[in-house]
Image 1 (cartoon, rainbow, N blue to C red):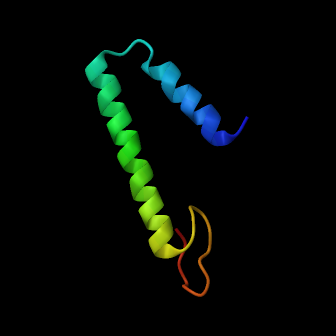
Image 2: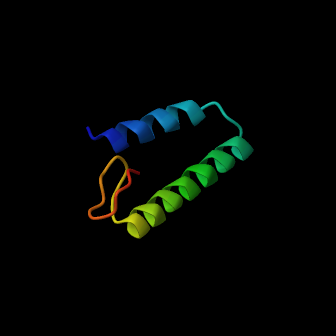
Image 3: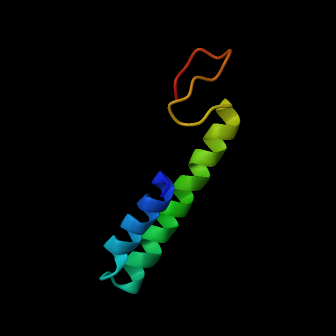
Length: 59
């Protein structure tokens, strides 16, 4: 099982007893965070904890 898959299952387990508004808020937050990560990866040319060459910075 991949890390992303297990993280998704853990998130779903945490939301099982939550009301509909909390579930919607968490799904919206998670979706926006993934969008931010994707845009940052595209802009920087490197994923999390990767070193983009030739730029001298860590993400």
